[in-house]
Length: 238
Image (cartoon, rainbow, N blue to C red; front, side):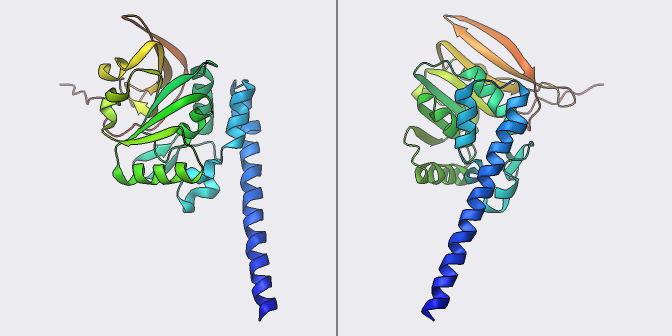
């Protein structure tokens, strides 16, 4: 009986090692096959995406598809964006300075975890109480001590903790709410995938605040599912 119990424990341990190895391989392949060929050249960004276990930020049933080059629906209507879009935005966002960041629509916290390697503090706003609770648990289990999950309306950002050097929307928006742009610090940058028309190509954009002046730069073509509540207003043609 002791022998059988020992064998069972060994098999379980081997299974865990095999799964870990599989996900490690998938992570390397994601970086080498998806991210790096798409104009992501910053070594720090590549290293962090190769380090952070993406499979830990999706439900258990989706761990094996966490590394596909597609948006992954983690709960109904909520998505973890495809790796290439995420990495290109992070590369544009980081400056090498001690930035203070806000993520809006944080899901289970993957992008907050990524940004935490470049920022002193990351505030992750999530509107769903259940998703926010899961994100807090997932991040705490991996000791991301500089990420704070806030359960609050996404459209409002998080004004009480403003201003931010980086604000990042984790999903498409029809337009960026002006009240969120106001939460940028001087020389702060806001990143989002803007899709004012759901039937046309969207774009990853960067808003830059310099004093009272706000400028916008289109970074690259990108599409992503809309964050709930950020869909463009329906236009009626008579």
